[in-house]
Every structure is written in structure tokens, then in C-alpha cells.
Image 1: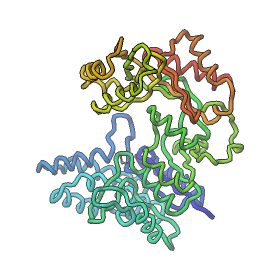
Image 2: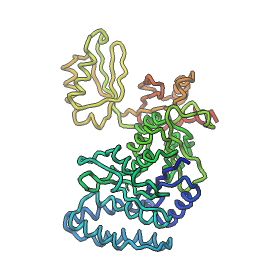
Image 3: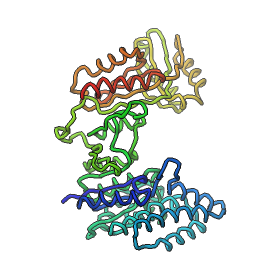
Image 4: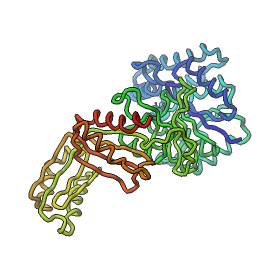
Amino acid sequence: MADKVVKFGGSSLADANQFRKVADIIKSDAKRRYVVPSAPGKRFSDDIKITDMLYKCCELAGSGIDFSEEFKIIKDRYNGIISELGIDMSLENEFSEIASELRSRPAKDFAASRGEYLNGKVLAAYLGFNFVDAADVIVFDTKGNLLLDQTVKAVRDRLKGLDNAVIPGFYGRTTEGFIKTFSRGGSDVTGSIIANAVRADIYENWTDVSGFLVADPRIVEDPDVIEVITYRELRELAYMGASVLHEDAIFPVRSAGIPINIRNTNRPQDDGTLIVSDDYDFSRESLNRTITGIAGKKGFSSINIEKAMMNNEAGFGMKVLKVLYDNGLSFEHMPSGIDTMSITLSTEKLAPVREKVLADLRKAVDPDHLEIEDGLAILAVVGRRMKNTRGTVARIFASMAHARINVKLIDQGSSELNVIIGVSEHDLPEAIRRIYDMFINSEK
Ligand code: ASP
């Protein structure tokens, strides 16, 4: 029987009621043997996450200020959960150890990690599972880089012979013995590492949404959930700002061929989104949509360069790109014509060197015309099926034409996994809605 690794995010463990839902989910499937919890998150929108309160305590301790008032709020939250669930345990010893460590050596990562550490203890006691401290199994080098091979070995050794385990997310220990955390949201990474180490069947990532949505719900009303998405498609969409999962959580499971299932703790009846490799058997999917998702991002500028016969001038492109390189700029797209070249890049990154880039370009290639156009948005239409479907691009442009939206840039990667179009920022929401209508509503 292959196992499932289940990770629960902060909102899934924000209070006693959420703990009950989590326990029900775990107990409803015997394969859910390895559990990775986050620290208690927000219970309502103005609430403060335990992790943020711990950072605050550490900051106060670092300035030699008494943090007992803030620390009491943290203790009260754990104690509230323990008493409401009727668990026979006390965290008083842990609380005093943490407080005294913070007073004598206020280290940020140590402080932040205690949210997951304490929550792991509570959850393990509530479930009747073994508690395995992440500090004993997740290994970082002295610079704070994860040592995956060593970690996998340590996890396997430690879990050997255990029927189940709760392993707190977000942190581990360096080879020098210091507690080290991943970046924010890093419990996702811990779950992925544990799934790799135990060769899980699946890595279930339980959160407060029923998976990835085809489009941003602030733009499209009640968009559909993506049923299956490949890692490559996810990367394209995540790059455009659609994110539910920590970026570094992909690699450990992807390299081991383990799918990730994004699930909703508040709606366990939903299947969520399955993230798979390219070799997945897609015939198992119920929907066969042409496109998987649509995402857009504002805040781009285009440097437009015109020069007669530019395409005959050897090294023209190189000189232009060298100017960008010398000014520390990376670019997103570079469509070019016979006498024109335009470079799309972030307005914000361009801002500090804007005038210098223009001057350098004039010097480097002596253009006939040079300008910067601001207020651009980039929209990505992503889908693995586009490659084998004729007419996708025609449908995208038909929907833009009907909406009278001017397309300023077109780019289709050689993988044919996405079509990128550039539009004015103010056209972006309507462009997304039209494409959603064209592909999702009309394929229903
Ligand atoms: N508790 C940490 C954070 O708030 C890590 C996590 O939740 O994944 O970032």
C-alpha cells in the first residue's frame, strides 16, 4: 500500500473547529499516514498569523524589549485549541523554553519555526500520531541550502517502523545545529520533501480553496477549477502571478514522479486540482478542454526601436541586448520585424535606469526612432492541448477583435504550451473575460 503525505496550511489549522475537520480528513483514509502541518493561520481577515506574532516577539526580544504580552497571545491560541479539543496535554514547558531561548539568543528562524513545532505537537496528540521533529530530519547546509539526499535518508531512517507521523512544516536544522526555515509558505516544501522520501503515491496539499482556478476570480465571476494541470503549465501560470503553492515545493515531488493534489479542507468532497507530469494518462480526465488556464499581469513597458534595414545589420540585436545587460535588466519578450524591434520588460525594473537605457541605446545602435511605451499588460493563455488543436490562436484573436481590444504583442513559445498577448493595461480584465467565454463557457 503506497502512502499519502498530507500537508495542511495555516487556515486549515487556525482553530479547534478546523482541527476537527483535519482529523476527519486524515482518519477517513488509512493511507494518510504522514501529516505536515503549518502554524495556525488567520481565523478571519484581520487576524494575525502565529508565524507573524513569533517574528514580532523575536524583533522585540532582539531590541531588549519585554515581549511577554505578545507571547501570551500566542500561548492563549494554542491553549484555546487544546482545551476546546479536550486534549490531555500541556505545552507549558515548551512555552518557557521558547521564551527563554528568545531572551538569550533571539534568532528569527528559530522564533518563526516554533509555530509549526507547537502545532505539530498539538496535532500529533489530537490524532494519536507520533511526533517527529523536523529539526531531526530536514537538513540544511551552513549557507541554508537544503541538502536533499541527506534529508531523504534522515526521513527514511526516522520513519522506519513508525505507523504514522506528524512532521511540522517550514523548518529544519543546519549541519551546524541551528534552526533554519524555508521562505514564507515553506510548509509546502516540507510536505513535498516528505512525499519524495517515503515515495508517496500522492502529495495532498490541503488549503482553503478547491484547487487552481482557470482564471482570477476577481476578474471572472465564479471561474471553474482546473481539474488536471501539468507541472510545466503550472510554471507558466505561476509566473504570471497565479499562485497557491510555494515555488520550491514542485521539484522534490516532480523529480520523483509524484502528483500533487490541491484540496480544500472546508470542502473535502471536492476533487481539487491534480498537478501531474507530462506522461500522465490524461484519458482519466473528465474534461478535455483546449486551454488549461488564463493569467495576466500588469506593469510592463515596451522599448520600441526602429531603424531602416536593421535586419541586415549583423550584431544589431546583440548590441541592444548588451545595453540591457549592462544596465542589469532582464526582458520578457522581444518581437521583431524588418526595421523594428521591441522589448517588453517590467516598468518597475526599468524605472531607475530608464533615461540611461535610452541614451545607451542611441549610442549603441543609432536608431531612426526610439520610444518607451508604458501601461502594457501581458496575458498568457496556457494549455497542453493547444499543440494538437487547430484554430486556437484564431479563436483568441477573434475574441479580442469582437471586444475591440487592440493586441500589441503576440508570442507563441516553441513548446506551443502558451500564447502570450500584450494589451493595454485597461483592456486586461475584459481580454481575460472574453477568452474565458470563448474557451471555457463555449466548450461546456
Ligand atoms: N507558517 C509559515 C508562514 O506563515 C509557513 C507556512 O505556513 O507554510 O509562512
